[in-house]
Length: 82
Image (tube, rainbow, N blue to C red; front, side, top):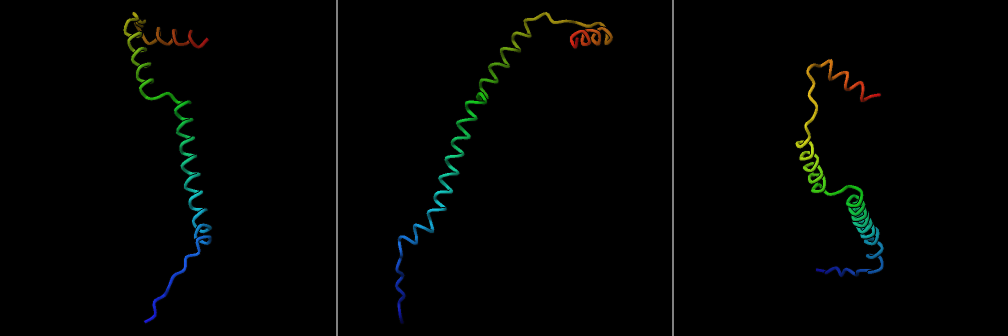
């Protein structure tokens, strides 16, 4: 029986693997950039919650406006549109 010896040409192997490695690195870099930009553009969810809680607390302290009828409400909404 003959045993086959496999000679590995390192340069050929590198040339075959390099495009795949570059694509994976490029994908990772792009994902990291997108993540960093999203953090800068969109505040974290916790900031939304805190702002919402502040607005609700402020609204609960307000006396608000009570309308006796739908006509009165409609008139008020129309006045806001002007």
